[in-house]
Image 1 (tube, rainbow, N blue to C red):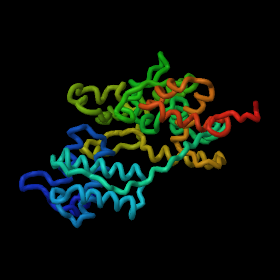
Image 2: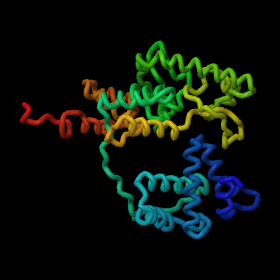
Image 3: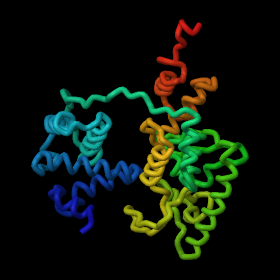
Image 4: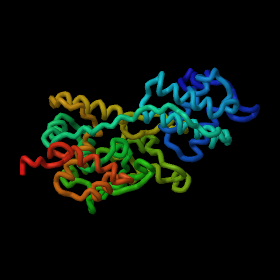
Length: 335
């Protein structure tokens, strides 16, 4: 029995005869709105936990008080992070408003999980080079783009060939955080290695096509609008997975992009081999990208645009970690 079927057998059939079960309704509502598979799985997880927490009662029998109790339980007994509690809250709002189409009532008095204020881990330029030197092959190329272009890890892994503009030295990030597109730079120093990498990826794509495969996943309704786009070279992943997998939504066997977990592990191991004392991750490359640009004198609004931050206050956190002492302020003693 698959993990999905086990999950659904534990949740009672709460739909009317002839209608999909509740978890299937949540899944359908997510796909109708083109939510990512990651969001879909998270929402189903929290709906299931909510039902089990209240003794498998139908959510239509529950309301604001029960939602309050569940969210408070997550913070007090579960000790979850603030972002986790917010995700659970979003999932339950989605359940009531979009799936059940009922108003759960005013949800007030929830004990909120504390969101700690953390400064980002920023590496020096020397430490960045030490970590990159410990990465090899595709992992090194990904690391170069994370630091050289300020990409988030998933933004990098979701790049398609058409998103790279070697002529203008630009990378177009599609459907980034907040479902926003943006442009950032394509570092000149990475272009030769990236071009050689794309040649190998194209050869892999040709082998997949010869085997009757080679169809890449396309977002939204593009596969229906452009039925041949899925096999065309511009739409292929820049960093495809080394193995084929089954698409859980369609059951189609194809090659997805590389998994973020394998990249994260490779970076963690590289940090350890480099002998760094800081607990740096793949996201530390992005933090270092922003900080080093500000250190070089670039305008904070420019850095904000490259990072894709909606508010400049988010970008301003990097002014607190500039290599100039506390809060980036020069000591009067040094004047």
